[in-house]
Length: 111
Length: 117
Image (cartoon, rainbow over all chains, first blue to last red; front, side, top):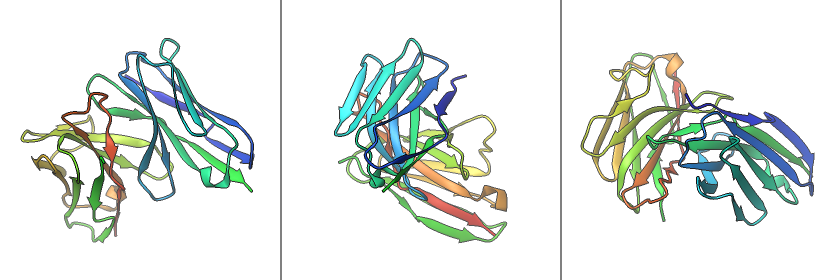
């Protein structure tokens, strides 16, 4: 059974800092891995999707990497801003098409 | 493109009543829709997967007679919580995947906050 773990559970950084969020999964047989952002009481915003054949994806200040063989992904946020404060969720998609989510990392960027 | 809406965004109901939540794909045809539930400070847990025109597939531990899912068209799926109880209070999120989505990407709705009193 696929399990997704995110470390740390919470992170507080000063504005401008670069940071890394970690995601690990137990079964490397995945179709893709996605990073989402969730603001309090809101739905999900897709940030980056990495296909199983890819190593990384970039969008603006965000860079996500995938090492399928070791079951790891990282989300790198450069020059963090207070507006980046949110919960970041990692999810892997298996053969059935369903997404399995981690519990998220709650990020707080202090001005 | 790829917008998914949910209605209502927030609902409060009394224990024992039924509540219907709608999930619509606004600009694409969703052959598959997924329903997730999220309890406070927990991650999203898949409840069921529905394909247009066929019965939903429920995850282990999810009561199919309590959470009725109908995916009658390529743009609409509904989740009905029957005889709701306070423990059903949660954040319900749907997602949709189109027939042309080669990457299997799912597009998420904004969620529905259900409070059962």
